[in-house]
Amino acid sequence: MSTAIHLAFKEIWRNRGRFLLFSMVVGLITLLVLFVAALGEGLGSGNREYLEKLNADLIAYQDTARLTIASSRVDCTTRRAIRVVEGVRAVGAIGFAGASIPLEGEPEPMDISLIGVEPGQPGEPPVVRGTGLVRRSADEAIVDRTVALMSGLQVGDRVVIRSTQGNEDEFYDLQVVGITDSRKYGLRASVFVPIVTWDEIRPKASLGPGAEDPACNVVAVQLEDPSQSEAMRQLLQAQVGDIEAVDRQTAYENTPGYTAQQSTLNTQNTFALLIGILVIGGFFQIQTLQKVPQIGMLKAIGTPNSTIAVASMVQILIITVVGVAIGSLASFGLSLTFPPNIPIVFEPRSGAMAVVSLLLIGPVGGLVSIRYSLRVEPLVALGLG
Image (cartoon, rainbow, N blue to C red; front, top):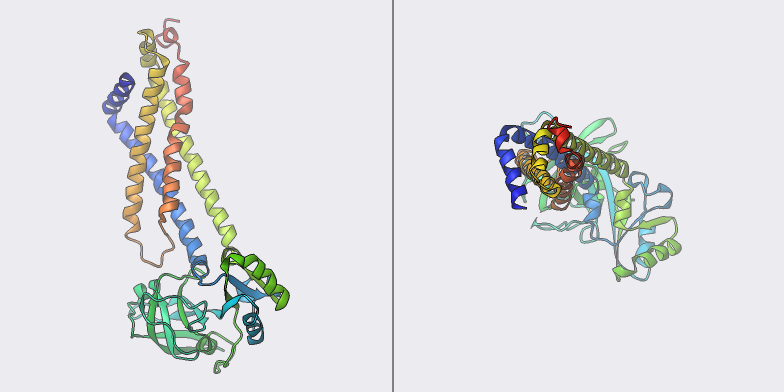
């Protein structure tokens, strides 16, 4: 074992320029894989973040909407019917719309998801600074962390929401009463307002006041016993009618494009790993072909195949580890330069899985070269056979 390790380090040191260059190639592959993984996590969380963190056990849609939030309408009568079902603890209306916030000094406004919620009910996010919403029709708002970072808003500031009413843009001045953590929906940062205020300022065909009890897109349902969510889901659909209730995961997996987007990015990640296997395998195969005479000499003086195999594997592991370390550090450094609205998230779990996969592709890619080196005949390698 010590002989094999000595041979591996000796060759790496004598050809350090070549091996360092290849480690940088492995680093670039690592950079690609980690960024694809981070992009998948960022795009996924940008679509599901609010629904995934929702303080509810079930989400009820209009039954004909086919779990599409934009197509769903749940009126106040249906919400009252859900509230009286035995086993339901609380019900909150949630409405979704698009709007924008003009930023001082910026030519383009920041697009946001304008989300209407009922104060104190499921759907309203917990605040990390400030207070929650108070009244259903107050001119107040909770902004998520991304909005606060991009706009510089603090608790107590005024925020201007731009919304299209008919053919004209209207501007609504709201007070920021609280800041929550990141709660993106539809790849946009979120601003939460009372449901009646939301109905007033959301984009619509004509300018008008909000209804006292407006229809919403979906209903967040908290249960007395969350462990009975499947039974309660069936009970709600049977007793209320005209609704379809699902859990949070089913809800965000049915947001438009979410599943297809994640499948595409996972496929790209798989191909990047396959490319890594081919590149590493090709490099070490060429390396083995170049040192066939040396391998033949080692075998001629009695070096066992196990020593040659271990030396080759040690080289592969060192180059792979150094390359993955270079790529990981480069990924971390670049991630610090991205603004908060870029949908790239280096999540520890997905990053760790990507790094482990990259560390495995080195030995897998080098198996062909190891197998070839073990088949070298000493006399033929030395030109005597």
